[in-house]
Length: 222
Image 1 (cartoon, one colour):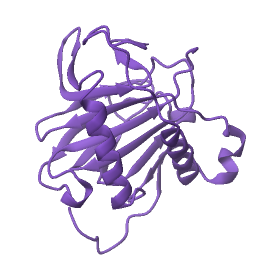
Image 2 (tube, one colour):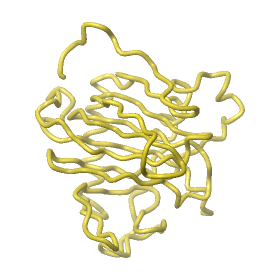
Image 3 (tube, helix red, strand yellow):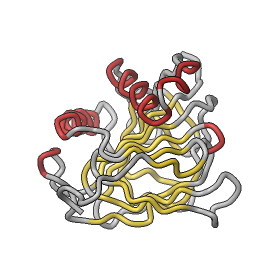
Image 4 (spheres, helix red, strand yellow):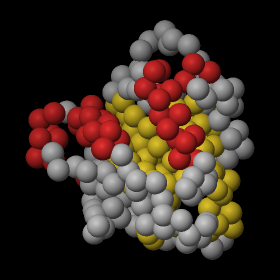
């Protein structure tokens, strides 16, 4: 799955409001993001396996801007060490806005120039990690979620807003891919049933594992 593909992958509308843009992030930008994520993973709130009511997530997560814990946002990581999470940088806001244009087109995004993501959930998957089908619904804003993938490829399962079952579409996400879901797809169930170990390009700074950065607008005050 590494290397150049014989037939370049094209931008795909997976469902109304859900768009896959393959290879959107150049390698040098991926490497910059990896270094930023490594810094955030060291603290002030370190990366951890989130404890859910039904068990412990196999994915490791660190948050910036706002801290997510089941099932709410706060400025401090009360389920980890009580520290205030790192600030959400302006350059990441701009990256989110640029990603929205790449997915939806400048004309369609023009009315949403106020898009201002203020939190990121950064998930690290080793070869055995999975993410069950779930909805992103703790946000008060209905603004789109911007998802960036770096490192190992994975199967991204994108479903519907009504049930965890079918219909759903399996999309292969590779390093540098952008996936945006908003509008009628904003609260669709989605998850990662499989990661493909050994598919990461070391040039990105990720020799193993998958990094997923999701930018969100919480709609929370302050």
